[in-house]
Length: 87
Image (cartoon, rainbow, N blue to C red; front, side, top):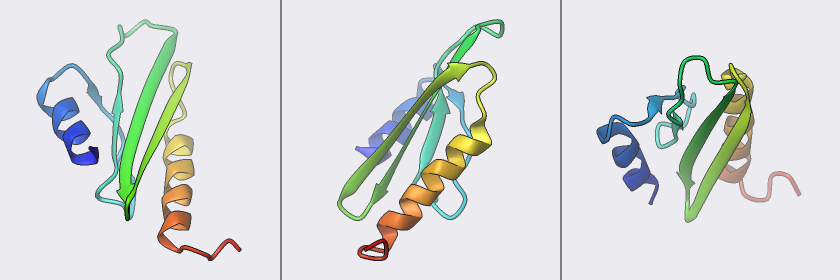
């Protein structure tokens, strides 16, 4: 499902390319279509970690704080990569 999302969002040309997620090449972020003057922006990210599909949806006033969103996703993926580390 994660790979399908990456191919679909990249090949259709409808979505804007989102930021990369450092250390997680399987993670894909993209921004929803929006007019340049739109007051609200949306970004979605997905990543596979083991047998889990992680999806992050962010919506807010444009421009979105993409770095903060990617940091949140990176922290979650890092945590999932180390099962039991938070216990």
